[in-house]
Image (cartoon, rainbow, N blue to C red; front, side, top):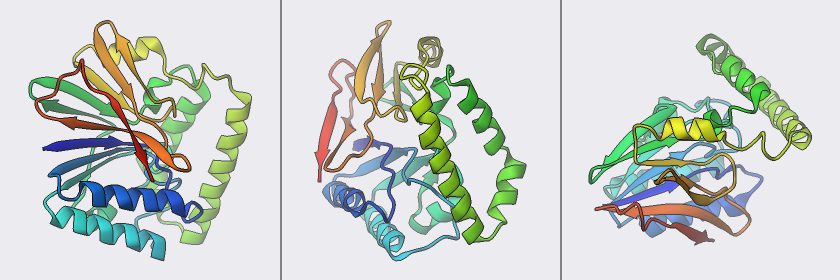
Length: 239
């Protein structure tokens, strides 16, 4: 069994190379008995499960083929695609994970999350996150016309970019105490979000940060069982 962890692909019609890289990844792992875990920001924005377009249809078809070959797909919300729901995942028998979820492989306890909840020093973002994730507000937004949701998503992306330019590098990274708390009951923490791929040692335990997908490559994590946490490494996926 192969366990594959990726995050921060930020797929969109504006970046066809990233879409092609993801489609190629599915082909590469199609016959490897793979459990694929996408830990957030799969898409650069998600305006609703009722959205469709040719570039997205191609992804869905590839995922259906991937699943039909005996593989599984798991998705966890990111800060860009938190509106994505089970309705979309049902198209290819995908599974929706909780904001913080757990996996145990050969007695190794693993915590999975996108990573934004660990950035507790970014107080303004955490406040915004709490508001925008409110089920009532989210339900209201999903009921609005697609054209309105598209404009809203564009506005969020622009505001996010402007805000990042004003924030320090450290504020947008994880808080060390939050990381230590996250690792208390597990052996391994895997997340994305920060776009700073690396494997960290935290009091004898491992924190693995997945990479964002760039023009020609991304840092991903492939794990085989039985797992040896002292030997896990990030893999460079080139496309």
